[in-house]
View 1 (cartoon, rainbow, N blue to C red):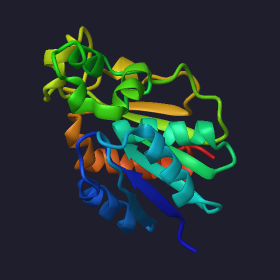
View 2: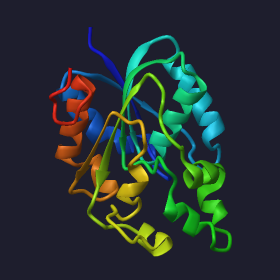
View 3: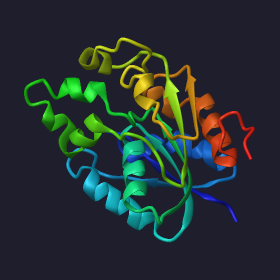
Length: 206
């Protein structure tokens, strides 16, 4: 039986943004489902509960982009009984987003982030759950986030690499891709597939 991978999109994106990545996972032998949510209007609370309900009692893996990674991790923290073997976060500011914090200093900017503002700004202190978490970060600085965050170090245009380095994750890799480019990068897909299979991005895990 094929293993199912549930994909989560990021802020301001529709579920169809995950189509290219889903296709590559299917070619690697996985069944895929795209979990769509209203990232601004509804926010994390509804999205997290909806994800928990979607997973139910099934054994699945997760692949998430940007805010989707925080939604996935929050679901695992709130519902540790979920049978999620591995989670791949792509460009997710798991330690909190400097771009989001910078944007929130602008007038009316809170409307752009909506109910997701707090989760994006704060992130998590670490990961201690049973699910193996791997993070793919990009280092091509193409994006508007730099205007709001004032990045001092390597970033993907929206998220700094340091913002993706969460204590407790199983593996972390940096590849040549921008924040949005992670969704269409063959290397990002290959790394995700390697982690889903072995728990390591180099494919050399157990």
